[in-house]
Length: 111
Length: 114
Image (cartoon, rainbow over all chains, first blue to last red; front, side, top):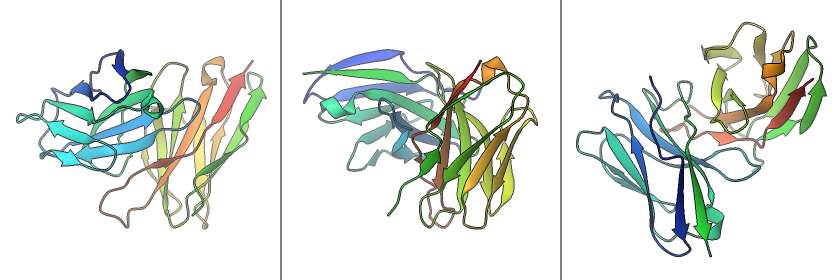
């Protein structure tokens, strides 16, 4: 199964860090790990991606386990706008044609 | 810079009918992908078009077909609609000119089949 495994839901308080885990135990050596999120009533939007090393951008950080079988998306200070469904995707390329979305993690942010 | 737009926003059809959904890619993008998202599920990849040719297909039957035009806009056609085709249909555009093909999604078309 090419899908990843994520918790169905998580909850966080506003302005606190959030760690969203993802298990991709069947990952191959050349698979990328992508994170997208879907805000209510919108299409998904890109968050971050990585291959082997940890990655940082203005939205989040991605921590990839040494064996690459799991990763964690880190939101450093959750805001109410971060409430969304977060999808962890692995694919053998970065062209999007082999994206397999699972049900994702629904993140709730409490004020 | 104009984002990805889709039309119509909502659509109601009856079983057996045919439907055409439209997508206008983000400026400068030459690749478009279509996804089907059932309620409470993640998007499922239907197919991708690059320079007007199908460039990959997910596990969807041939009654799902598409077109990409020279201006990189795109259509998704579904024939012989079934009740299970009721879903949110998303298109996403990207450009292979960049190192990473970040996909930019439109807001989707909500299709209801009665």
